[in-house]
Image (cartoon, rainbow, N blue to C red; front, side):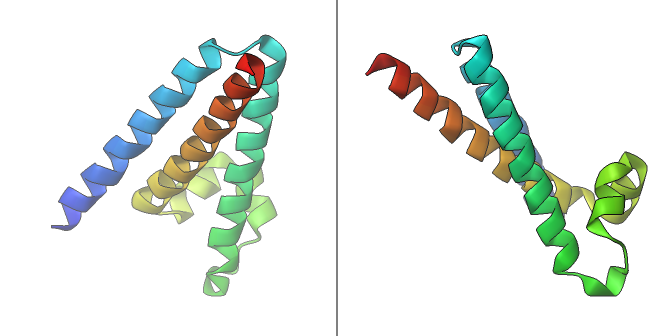
Length: 104
């Protein structure tokens, strides 16, 4: 049951990332950079919140964000996929908003 849930989250994360990439192709370079930067900020914020909700780890979120290897060893894959999924969904909503603004 647990592995099924893990696969669902993994697939949803990858699907959202592909959708975000497709939407980026429809944006101007400036809008695409802006959307990417805002999505990256959101992902960093989600990771920071994950660390702050687990004070027993005694790892500074800033240190973990600065070193990808620390991040990979501390954050379970399932949690990282959830974070990536949330960040990709946020990126999709920003890209859709930019497309709508351009059309209107």
